[in-house]
Amino acid sequence: MQINKSNGIYMILPIIKYPNKNLRKKSQDLSKEQILSPETQGFIVNLIETMFKEDGLGLAAVQVDKHWNMFAVATEDGPMVFINPKIVYKSWLKETDEEGCLSVPGVYGLVKRPKTVIIKALDRNGNKLSMKAKGLFARVLQHEADHTQGVLFIDKTNKITRGDDVLRELNTK
Image (cartoon, rainbow, N blue to C red; front, side):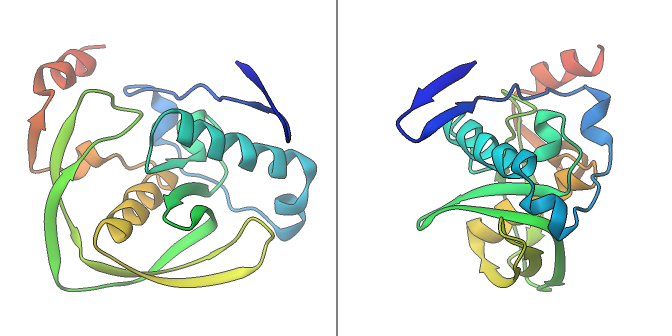
């Protein structure tokens, strides 16, 4: 679907849903030259707009069937893009909380994750960034980084809290 905006035209990208096998593919790193290309810059805008349209806290490129190693997250200061992300530190202190996913709609589960992480990546301009994150923000970063490696939250959950019937049905497809 195309939407006209005062700042140009962008596309709301279709989100692929589990059990689509493309969600399991590992993403490919991008060079600075690739990041700065008009194609990638346009895609980043579309990824962010799709995340907001779908009310997501984050959205990985793989979720819209683009196997580039990147994801967008919503923050209090606006959207951030992480390209070629690497989580370089995970705290030993962990917490369990409920997660859901735009690619597994209607299913929620408890996932235990490190409470604090440090992530290194490139931003949308190809500049290096390093960030320490705690709590929900750390959880979102880990969830989206998992997507870039073909891992879904349902692989890590120890208990489905809502939608177990939906998940059972999806697993029969």
